Image (spheres, rainbow, N blue to C red):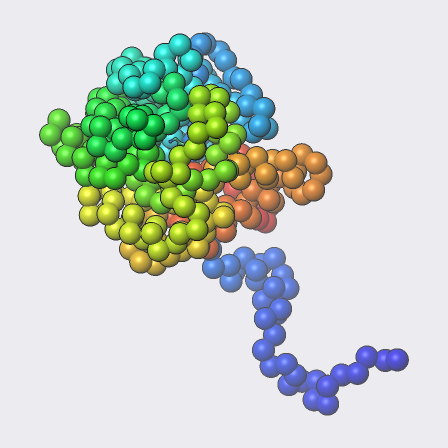
Length: 341
Ligand code: PBG
C-alpha cells in the first residue's frame, strides 16, 4: 500500500526540527554547547623514581608518572592548550602514618612535582588536592580519633598542608576532604602567610561514591582504606539540596571555584549549583566513570573518542565551566582534529 500523505502536505507539519539536523554545516551552526580545550583540567598521578610511566590496570590508558615524565607530559598538555592540571601523589607505603605526617613534608612528592612544573615555566595552572588520604596508613582523609574522622583536628593539619603546597608554588589548592569549615580556615591560613593570591577550588559537593575505586588503586589508598568508608564526611548520594548548602558555605568561606564530584551520575547537582550560584563550577569525571568508558570501547561496544567527547559535552550542557577528566590529553588532541565532532 502506498504511503499516504496528509491532505495538505505543504503545511504538515509546519515545524520540522529535523530540518536543521540535515547537514553537518547546519548542525554545527545551531549547536548550542561546545567543548573546548580550555574546559579541560588534567588529573595526573605522580610517583617516585625516574623515567617511569606505570600503567594503572583499572584505568586503561592512564599511567602513574615519575616527576621527570610528568614535566614532559605537562609540556605536551600546555602546548595543546590545556589550562591546568591537578596533581595526585602516589605515596610510598613506608611514608604513610596514622597522622599523615608526610603531607606536611615540604620535600614530599606533591611539593617536588609542583616545583618541577614551576621550574619548567609552563603556561599552565597547577592544582593540588588538599586531603590526607594519600598519606594516612588507614586511608582516611583526616585524623582518626576513637574511630571517627575528627573534623577540627584535621582542619588544622589541612591548613598546614595547603600552606606547604602554596609555598612549593601551586596556583590552586583544592580541598577534597569534606571537613566542615576547612575552606575558611585554609583561606585564613594562606592569607596570614602572604598567599592571598593562591586560589581555592573547593570540592564542595563530593559524594561518598563507589566510582572512586580505580583512583584508590592508582594512588594505593584503597588497600589502606580496606573495608572502611568515607560516609561520615563525604555526602550521601541520596541528597541534592544538601549540595547547595555545602556550596553556599564554601562560597561564604572564600572559595573561588566550586566542584561537584563524581560527574555524570551527578549532573543534576552540577546544573543546580550553576543555576543557584552562577560561580565558576567544575565537575570531576572520576576514575570509575573513565574506566567505564574505557572498558566499553575496549570491548568493542563503542568508539572511545565518541564516547569520551559526548560525555564531556554533557558536562557543558549541564552548566559546568570546566571538567577534570583523565581524557584531557586525548580530548585536547581530538578537539584539534579538523573533523566534525
Ligand atoms: C582524595 C580524592 C579522591 C578522589 C580525588 N581526591 C578519592 C577519595 O575521596 O576517596 C577521587 C578521584 C577519582 O576517582 O578519579 N580525597
